[in-house]
Image 1 (cartoon, rainbow, N blue to C red):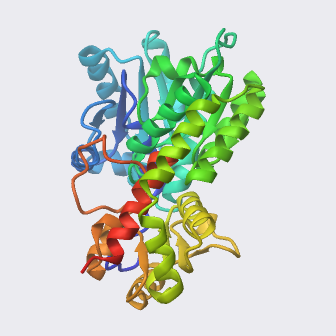
Image 2: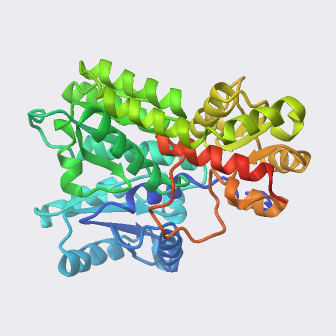
Length: 409
């Protein structure tokens, strides 16, 4: 691993950890060194996930490393079952057992008969050769492969959200806005919000949903598996803006063969347009008179960048600035991946205009922290009720942020 001035691209292990940590009625046990889960608990509390999946570490010593011992795993599992009686224990390797070749699936297969009432579910990707986003994708896929139970679809239409995970900025607020819109526009309720607000039981019920809403591309493999097993259709899209959210609702309604609640949708669109009515002419005036002041530059998850770009530069016609994504596997000809050296240079060059990226980058550049759209963060985020970035209320929030940025210091 090279030297970094800022946080390097997180590993797959971190993606798995942040995906599993919000799940209730479960335990996440790492076969790793002392202190790993202490740091993880500190991050999760700062991110607004104080209690859900319980976190444990087995600890390791020289004997475990040199001789490949697994006795600590069996002792820790026994202790966890006695203490917590969880429905599922997720087992995660750290980088050391991953490097020495510890076979966690084989260990779980050996231990499972001793615990018929507890599911032992091993995960991989403890090393540094897999990115955070791959870890998220693999965790979501393994969850839907292992836990959903056989059964029929619910009598009334229901849905799952796939991809609401703790590594995303404002993940809880965005999920709540989607739930609000689905209730109002289509009168349907969720079975499972995977994974920011869910339990093992809710994951087991996922096969009963009528549609899966995939809000980040890492969730598509999981949605494909659920479609193959249960026949559940899915939509991969994040709703941004007034027009974009309306189109998102129409696509869901078409998949379900339902008519959306026009009164709710019209009322929401009218309310948003009314709230932003005073700000939009200001944005357009500055765009015409001082276009360099209005260039919208974005650096975040590829789906977040594209969604905000569609709203800001599509619906509101702001000039497009420099845009990049935070994952090399998601890069394309239209949206490049920037290394630390590249994004720091991009941030330095954006002396004017609207720059939205991570809290870490904004703080370093002396920019307004209100413009944050991604992690790493440098603030506590214990309030899950902050305004969202997606949906109708997200559109109001974004316009409010942009117009205040124009008149800021």
